[in-house]
Length: 516
Image (tube, rainbow, N blue to C red; front, side):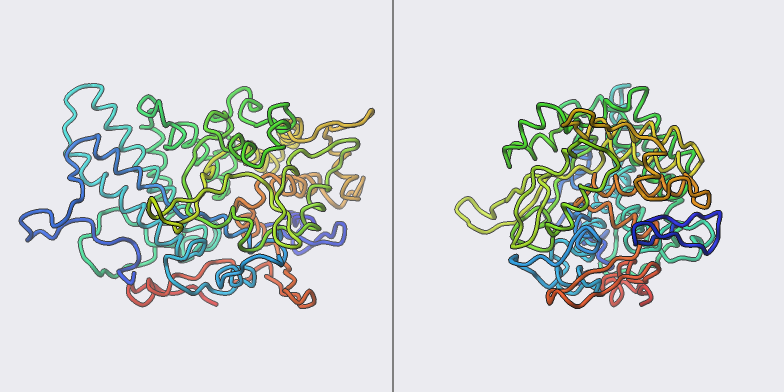
């Protein structure tokens, strides 16, 4: 499957038979009003009065959305119809690319993501609104104040950035000024029911960039010594910038911020699946995900608790055994094992699910058997930053630099198991793998981009990243339904790749829906 070579308009290449072209009940949802009505003499509930930096900092723990976008993998070519699992309406809707229905509290839906993200934004805005008036009488307190402002700005920027990439078109410089995005909320809510307007994709990106860069300038890791990986630390902020500029198509800035994060030794931020530590842990379905998501690993840059069923093996779709084995068998090397393939859970009758995150459960009471499932997700990883830089190198024609970065990943993923085994990358090896050899009509950039996307798909399977590449590269997706005969297709330019605005935001908040 090859990316369209943008220098040769309207030509599509086929490799191995596949084709790819490049390229509230309340209000809007946003939040329940947090500010008190001015006519009240006292706070009508038990909310915290934000009158010092410590309280403001504590409130920011709620500025990280509890919703996961990993459910988008159910909409990608990573999964097939999985038999023998519980399929809720949202699982069926996702697999068939239908607009989601149901309660806003349903986990793993665009509506849940929307509500939870704007709730996180509300907490960031509350802190930013009072920060200027909070006393800071010493240099240390001034630095602490800057750190709190940094975290509030970065969480606000990140939430809006992810929202616009789910509920708006992918950023395109030629159309972003006209494409509808999402409301960018910068002040606390002061009315119960408000009317909102969708900022354009360009406006959202501009505001995200402003908040993000200000947050990066102020970030200070000294105040997160015991819980730094659960906050927007310096490396996580740089990783955010790397992703932001990749999605924006500013390749040079993507490289710049990736360089800042990775430093002179990018391998230090890449977990080694071939190591004795990971191979020993692979025999434990609890020990492995604990190691994988450990805040002690340098590759794990920021962790967020997510309320989700994605990690459960008894719910929803997963890679079928065939999809899973074919994906990890696809490589250009000889005599090796891809250590990302194992361990995996059996899911349903015909599924294989990669062990990555520990499936956790919070009881609603001490003696209760009910509650909600969650996991600790990796919001940013060193591997993503490395792969972001790979794409930016390819886009700017730096082929040897891209291969060098991919080699770093290769050395920590593929283990040589037989004499004469080879895991050394080269353009010749990659071109031969795709069957184009010395074909002069297909450039190295096109072939290498295809290989990069394959590696990225493996690296982030069932973590939600594939959906954004499907949007960014206009990739079509085919799903076979439960009868094992009917095939449905999400076309390259399908409007359903942009999630529909939640119905309550349309009905009550006054937002215009996305076209269908």
